[in-house]
Amino acid sequence: MNNNTMITAGFRSCVMTGLLALLVACGGGGSSGSANNSETVVAKGVITQLGSIWVNGVEYETPEGGKYSDDDSSSSSANYKVGQVVSVLGRRNDDGVSGTADEVRYEAEIEGPADNGSIYGIQILLTDRTNAPGIPALVNGTRYEVSGIWIDDFTLEATYIKEDDDGNDEFKGYVKNASATSFAVRGMTFDWIGTPSVSNGDFVEVHFDTCSGTAPNVICQATKVDLEDDYSDRAEGKEIEIEGAVDLSTTGCPADADFRIDNYCIDYDNRPAVWMGGLTGPVDLAQGSRVEVEGHMLNGVLIGKKIKGRGNRVRISSVAKNVILADETFTLIDGKITVITKPGVTEYEDGLTINNIAAATDGIEVRGVRTGATEIMAIRIKSESLSGSGNRHELRAEVDLDSADSSAGTIAVMSIVAKGNGGTELELDDMSYTLGLTSFLDLVDDNDNPADGSRDVIKVAFDITSGDGSSGLPYIADKMEVEEEDD
Image (cartoon, rainbow, N blue to C red):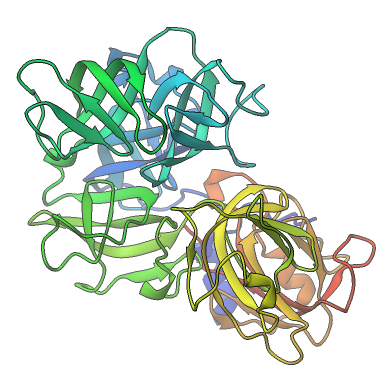
């Protein structure tokens, strides 16, 4: 097991350049360094730890006298929960990992009764990282409050969920298609009695009842609409940190926007942006992929300076097997990873479909969301020629908790165990690593301490015939690579 649980990107840089004399300056802890200066920042993302609150890798202190709200009501910072998506208006120190929150706002994305894994036609995607104490699955008829990341207008990746018994049906988002009698928010349409009080682009919480129709054509009667504050009106000229799913549609954005997250139009080639967290460039921006963008607002566009891969995203190069057409599922890595597909979410390229995917024996690449220990929801599927005879497969995902074992030379990703040896190519943050396998695995961050960033994203490549991927007979890795940290 990896014992170096507080190694940071700065320390890694020292190791990689061999500047051992700078170890004291680089340090090994979470938020060391000067914090004498600060800048105003607007942040939106998932709370990863409490005490203060951690959002997008930054620890924000929540002092008395701050403005904290929960579902339109004044609240205490002590009431926030890990997994909730919040908006923060505050000050970030010049160390980049600490700051102070002046205002924090939390609103659930949707509240209502479950029906076959959905709430009013919105599919609620529970993952192995969803903070859902006591909720193994949605129970039909039970009411829930859900916070999370939208993959598309009809699919919400739940990061926090709890049972909700207040009886109020609510939905949050940005208004579109506003008319004299109705408007839409994401995948739901609302009829409106009287003079409409909303305009396209407004950020609202809708209270509603009396719904009819089936997804994707659910229409509900709006009873009340509250204009909400996501701080975007105060973002111009300020630093922005926003976490969410990529929307490649730039309709309504200025001409220089390249993609969007919610209502933020983002330009990645103005600076240009630095790509991190497993992203190599625009080619990795699949529809629905989860990223964090850091930059500043200029004339209504977020000029991205860092774009980082975030969350439980997976990329696998393998051969499809065990296709079940009725369920639209198949497996990868010799049957060990189950892939779920969904119309409207899964994008096929190169002429592939669920009907012919098993015929692509030369290989496919699947990108998706990790929904379980050995299960993913596919976002994009395309052809991928595997090197050699087709036996060399690749798996890229967040390293399993506490799985980097330097003494055994092994590491686990999505419950699949890979073992390195003298012939394994090692890379750390896009640089060849020459100090040996034991040292390499000691540098892997495989814990959930936000002070040293998210668990590392690991890419392993191996011959599928070299083992069975279990702890007793791991695959022999041709390559192990630690992607650049999210810090």
